[in-house]
Image 1 (cartoon, rainbow, N blue to C red):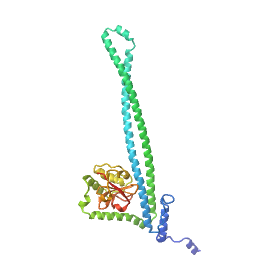
Image 2 (image 1 turned 180 degrees about the vertical axis):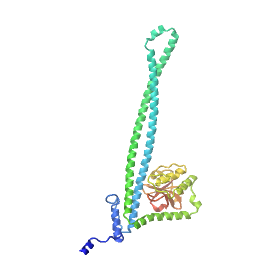
Image 3 (image 1 turned 90 degrees about the horizontal axis):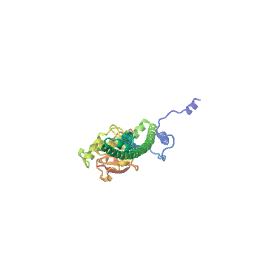
Length: 354
C-alpha cells in the first residue's frame, strides 16, 4: 500500500527541461487574462525564456500603443475642459452685461411712467415755462429712441448668450466622451500589462531574471558604446535647441517609466520626448503618433542628435536620437529611462522638431 501511495503522490520537481517548456506553454496560453492567448499561439519548441520574452515584449508593445491612445484622449479632454471653462466664463460676463442693460432699461421705463400720467397738451398748457417743456419733450422723444435701441440690444445679447450656452453644452458632451475613452484605454492598457506580469510570475526566479536581463544587456551595450564616444561627438546637434533636448534626456537617465507621465520624476515614451524638447523651448504634441508630424521628416541615414525616432507600424513608441545609432527612451513599466540601439525595435520613421 505504501508503494501505491508513493506512486499516487510523486515528489515535486523543479521546472526544468520538458516540464519547464510545458509550464511556459501553459503560461502563454492563459496570458491574455482568463483564457486563450491573444493572437496566434507560439508553436516554436525553442528555449522557454526566449518565447516568454517574445510574448512579454508583444504585450508591452500593445500596452504602449493603447497608452498613446490614452495620452491622446487625455490631451483632448484637457482642451475640451479649457474650452468649457472659457465658455462658462464668457457666459457669466455676458449675463452680467445683460443684467446691467435690463436694469438700465427698467430705470428708463420707470422714469417715463412717472412723467407720462398727464396729457402732453395739458402739460404744455399748465407749464409756466413752455420753452423748458418743449425741450424736455424733445429729450423724452430721444429717450424713447434710446429705449428701443436698448431693447434691441438686450435681444441681441440674449441670442449671443444662448449661443455661448449651446457651445458650452457641446464642449461638455465632448469632455464626457473623452473621459469615457480615457477609462476604456486605461483599462485596456492595464489588462495588457497585467497579462505580461502574469507571464513573468509563472517563471522561476532564474527564468524571470534571464528574460529581463536580455533588455538590460542591450541597454548596457548602448551605454558602453556611448561612453566610448568622444564627448564632443556625443553633443553634436543641428542646433542649440536640439543640443538642449539631448542634454535634458541624458539628465533623465535612470528615472522610472511611469504610465502616462511627462516628468519631472517619471516618464512614458512620448512624455520623455515632449519634456526634452519642452526644456529647449519647443512644444511637441503629446503622443508618438502626433509627434511624428511635428517638424521635418528625416531619413534614417541622415539622423542627428535630437531627432525623434519612431517604432512599430502604429507609431506606438518614440525615443530621442543621440548619435552613433543610439537613442534615449522610456521603454516600459519596470524599465527606467535608458540608452538603447535604434535597431532594437522595428524602425518606422524620424522627425526633426527644430
